[in-house]
Image 1: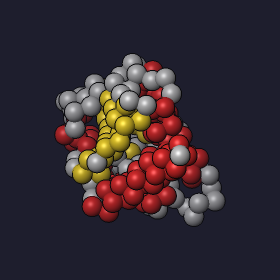
Image 2: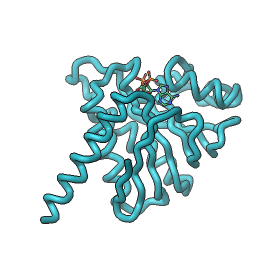
Image 3: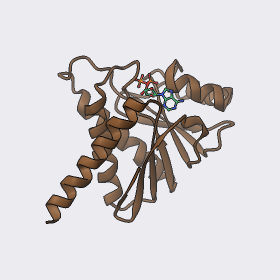
Image 4: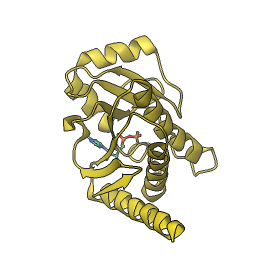
Length: 184
Ligand code: ADP
């Protein structure tokens, strides 16, 4: 599934982010950049120890922000470690922090003049952010970036389960529908 936003592509892919062709691969990292399970473990396994060496040098990355390292053995040019919030009921600023993690990742990639970036669904695994809400925030934040001046011409959401793919498809259709009705 894909959509065109100001001439740039937003696509949804069902699969493993470590095998994607994109200039930047985004990791769902923790604020200590210590590695972990889920997509974080998969990226470090596939990319090799050079990524963790750079993470240790950085020492951490605050929740809601994003920090770049080498991509090691991955095909990408860089890995962007985005730190989404841990869900704790929604009253602790989680939505703003999730939006910021996506926005900062896009800004880091655009700051390096990269053309393509692949995201996993941040915060929706071990961090338990409700999937439908997280998908809406992800789609709206990426669409808003693509509407502005940016070097990025392709954003992929690489979704690891049918339920994540369905949630993002729903969010993308709703976003496209809202845009159409605004244009009418
Ligand atoms: P978080 O701690 O931010 O919640 P997780 O890695 O636990 O991060 O989960 C984030 C999302 O990434 C989940 O939807 C999970 O299913 C998905 N995921 C896990 N492994 C991969 C992978 N190799 N490629 C893409 N997505 C993945």
